[in-house]
Image (cartoon, rainbow, N blue to C red; front, top):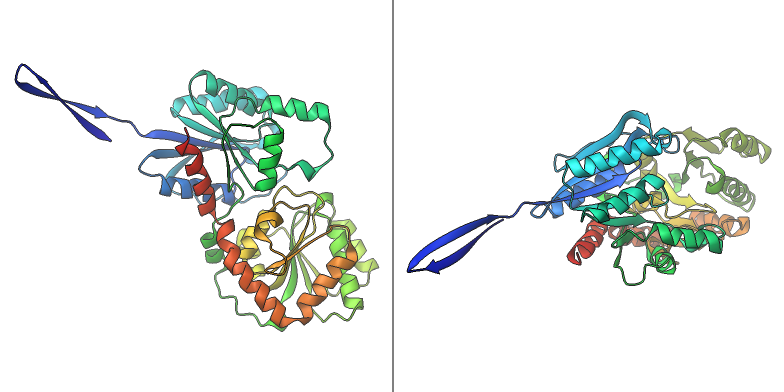
Length: 391
């Protein structure tokens, strides 16, 4: 930006030209996936006249998440501390030194961090404050995620001291942050979002599958907190209770796969349950095109981005009351139900209703389409703009 200042002295005019450099905005995660690329690209496109956006990651792979490397956008830059390494294996020293080197080299003015509980992130946030770089926080944790202790919560409140503000997933995350001491500091909503447009492009088709041909769908890692066993029991009860011939499709892999397959055989539903293993984003999108409803029964789930993805295809949602996404993206009797994650009867009854009541299903599908924008990355951009306006 260029401004002109006119000065008059002794009858002459002089002009000074002030060139104001563009600000640099950094966003840091342990590993980049498609969701993170969605957010960086959207912010870079919206704030192009004010900020250069720099995405940063610890490493290119992770033990926890099998994310595919995202397609990068020329609107932002992506930097990696440890190429071809695993995020969880990077040492504290390597992560901290590498992160600070990137922040200083890129001349970042505003920095957003995910993972406040990690020592390298905490120390980097402190260093940012010391050199007048404003650190902000990404958060989707809620108070009810797990049992809490006074000592641990007090310790967490100390880890949050360096931050100037936060972008959180939803109202429960905001309340938890206030509980941890974020009293006057600004908090905006919209952290957990995806590009609805990208998901629809990936599907490469129209959602024209007939109602009777649609399947129940689970998209989750096969780990204890995802609570897939409850869905298997509920699906068996659904079939015993007069359910139709709809299949149950499970997209995901993990250490519980063998145990879950054994349970499927024990329940006598092995001919009707399809384990597809790890699925790419394209395969998930295609599965959603032919699904009746998305099932997310987690006993612990900070958010559940698969819900955002399902809304892009107008899928009704049956979700655990423990999942953060349900608070914002699932409205009872509008586009789905929020259920007790351990109540098999509730889940089987909801599945039976979706199987038998086409009119209700169509109403819920329309409700999901209407709510899709609330899970879109544009909401993330809006939250970022709210925080940046208060700098």
